[in-house]
Image (cartoon, rainbow, N blue to C red; front, top):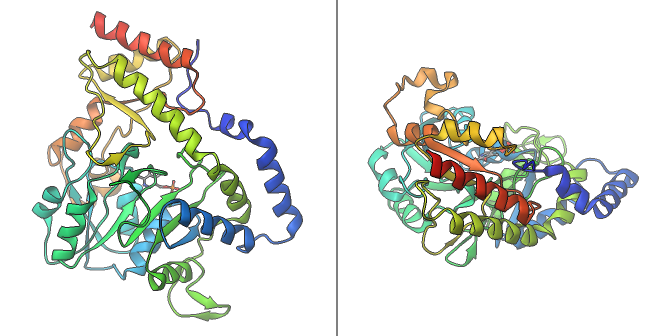
Length: 368
Ligand SMILES: *Cc1c(COP(=O)(O)O)cnc(C)c1O
């Protein structure tokens, strides 16, 4: 048996008739930038994530950059970011000229907390970017309260959390702005690069929209130093189709996660925990093991594809050498990077594949 980590082609194949039709209709429309397909997706997406407004963007990274720009965060400002995230969260802060201030996560949930944020706040702090890592919503209320007390903005990085809920409300309209990626491997994935920003403040969302379109509301009238980062209508049409299937696919992820959690509960593996009042969407199913590298090799030999999210935290990347962080500065993130392993998690994984991974995981646990 062979178990791929994630098969994005299969998601397309399952609904190819619908997707092909949607793509063809854009090709035949003659409208290749913005327009009705984009607006249609923006409206549907906003509704699905409980936000008043949504703006399509070029990708998840741009969504973060545009949100920071719309909130007028830049040179001289500090923005709190998790130590354990995909580097895009940090890079967006750097791109607007602000300084990323690392916040260590909780050791059990791997997400940042208000207490963690409180420890690193300074007078220069302007915003917090909580990341709903692996599909697990951050405990947001205390973070929003802390932000309000100190006059900070909250921008959620929800690139891994499509469909996730917090206190029974969807992630998407809970803070100042929420940033989405539709990178093909995300829970809601386009067939190319795409992203969005959602929120409830019409002025703020318009500002994101103008920044993303050369800083112009009207053609050839440029209010600000904008960029070009628009959602492609072909991707918008594909996303509208895929949005109809996201709940089914999320349920399938939950079923797979449930089997992993149940079957591996009496082993030495450290299993993912779920924060109270959140619903996890299992973008990734991440376990921890002291013998991570051996386990990785063992699964590989048995044709099970696993990945590491993430093998090196941003503060140890060459890109951030200028911040001067040494190994040992953020021990939680460093320890996570040495012990985490993401098991195959694909909505189209069969029960047999699921049980095969479990069987091999148990075999390794018994023999090591
Ligand atoms: C994927 C991802 C991004 C970036 O999204 P792109 O669409 O690839 O630019 C940002 N943050 C997190 C946490 C991600 O997982």
